[in-house]
Amino acid sequence: MSKKIERIFLLNDLPHSLSYRKKEEIRQGYLSFDDRNKVHIRQKGARFSKIVKTGSKENRKKIKTELSQKEFKTYWHSTGKSQLVKTRYHYSWEGYKLMVDQFHGRLEGLFTAEIEFKNERKARQFMEPPFFREEISFDPRYKNHYLAELPENQRQLITASGISHSLIGTLPYIKEGERKKVILVTKKNGLQWIFPKGQQENRMTYPEVARMEAEEEAGIKGIITARPIRLPYVKSGRTYNLLAYPMEINTVLNNWQEMEERQRKIVSLQKAYKLSDQLSVHCGLQYLEQLI
Image (cartoon, rainbow, N blue to C red; front, top):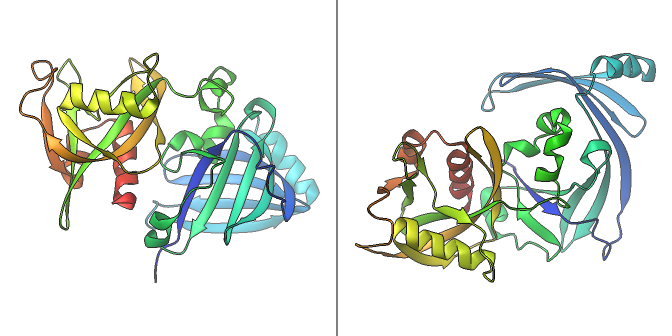
């Protein structure tokens, strides 16, 4: 049986060119959560529930218990600030079902769209509508339990109305038949392996910056093959947004601008996971596994 695939994208606003089929108000609060266990309550319209998830992603168990409105209110007060409130709109577009969430409160300005596919092939074939922004399916900051805990001083970083991107980069890969490889470079300190990336440049488009950084830092050229995704990039304890473009590489240079400052490796996706401990690299690799 094929595994269902979910893809999530940022929007600037509700898709006003479409008419929604229905909408529902959602409140969600977290009583506890860690990497393996999550307990949260949810109000969806006039229905109330408590949901317990245990185990790893590959072997997760879910227990859902219906609550009365009174029970929900009691639990809601126990969630403290670990809460999120949103309105969900259901749309149809080109035969697909879109769920668009408009967040409220401290997440005001955040709009996301989610689509579910029957399998990876369907997910890869999907052509995004023009009102979609970058994909956030592999950015853990957009998971509900992270959003529920988000401090106010980080809101601007993750909302569509805030500062969109601090860094621009690529997810460079090579396809050799069934074999798929990625290209990583070290930071200038030589201690950590990352994808090529750099700062925004005046008078240059995002794709132009991405291609320039790939050539300067890694000595590679190629073709951007898909829309960019947003990833978290951590530097000196601070998190930045990284706008990363998938790029299929067709040229690997023997000499390049920063070859004296960085190392370069062409490795399988499996080896790349072991080579780098960077969150942005692991999230990017997960995306490439689905894309290529």
